[in-house]
Length: 336
Image 1 (cartoon, helix red, strand yellow):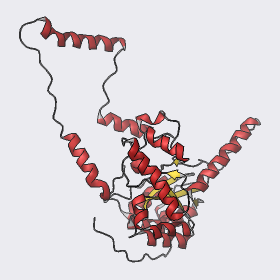
Image 2 (image 1 turned 135 degrees about the horizontal axis):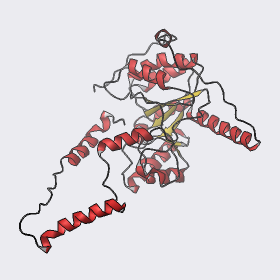
Image 3 (image 1 turned 180 degrees about the horizontal axis):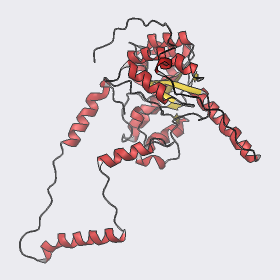
């Protein structure tokens, strides 16, 4: 999952300390046979017998196996963390599969270097979106946070300092979520009803606090990885256009100029395909309405009807067509 350069130094130090742990050598059995030296052998035989009868839990899977399992589980409605099923607060990843709506969402706002240009583009294209705010950025640029709402967009909570909350203490999780909720309300005057966990990582404590605050946890099902240095404007365009389908929630970042440039092409093409570009609240309201209608149809013994699927297959000529002539202002971005 993404890890912006702003937070890279913190994560790097933790990872280095983890991998620098010295190995523990296995004890060996040498010398004459006696009761003391025979204990390891007896223990080893006991373990073998337990495995044979199914009474022993195998050690944790290898890193490769865990990565493979996460890939298998990525399409489920719950998060990929092992503890996520303990607290019943599922993670939202998409809208209704029969909807004509797609939600564009932007993380890490308000970022002063790029947000004005991004808002200008969305205004020119008459697109309303959802911005997930970092508390520290709101404190630094309250006027930009208010400008997002003034343009008709909605805001969500993206934590205070973009820390990985999966293994954070309850006190830290409380600060990162609840304190940011309060800050958004004080600065903007609105109450956020969505929380997007940094890196998409969710724990039971995150779920408990979100339930208490009345917040829905929202992730995504389309991720062009626009935050990565090796990602280009063209790769962002290609990834979104190849993967956006009915009800998709697209993850983008308000910190990237290449994302703004990609949207110049993405927005008109998605509209040509029949998609409505909406705020997250509209997407989820449509999902709830459709689920209710299907439930009523089943209750009355009627077969559900499906709307025709929207085609996402395009020729290269079609993918490259439809871009507007929007001109981006010069941006003075910090060097990576």
